[in-house]
Amino acid sequence: MTVHFNDTASSQTPSATGGKASSESASIDQAERVVTINMKHRHESEILSQLLAVAKAVPINPTPEELEQLRELEEQQTLSEKDSTRHQAYNETKKRKEAILAQARAAST
Picture 1 (cartoon, rainbow, N blue to C red):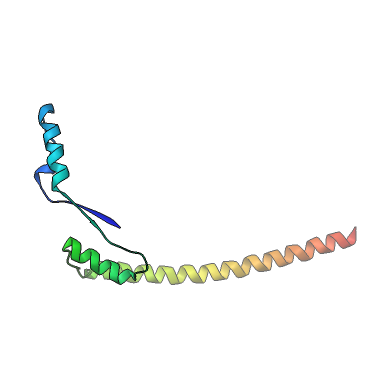
Picture 2 (picture 1 turned 60 degrees about the vertical axis):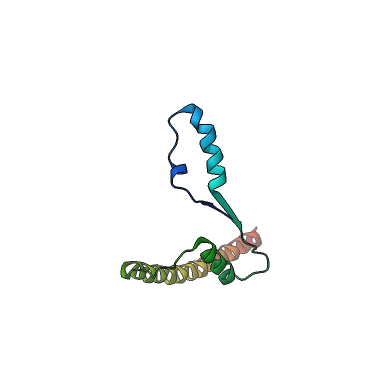
């Protein structure tokens, strides 16, 4: 994984003059820092810890509203799984009935 960092705030504002743009783009290239993290045969927690260290990031805890949203999503997921199982059983029953009817029609002709 390659992570690109832009270390200067001045490179984020575009230049108004055309002559200055080429020198500014050269300074943008110099101000950009590129870090590569080897992800091959590594666990996701190890990759995350390396990314946090390289980016000097700090993990934040979810807010109570976010925790509530996560709980609601889990409830919806369980309901979805139940509905999926119920619908699958319904489809199997329907296919079985259709197969029996098709067999009966074939036998009557």
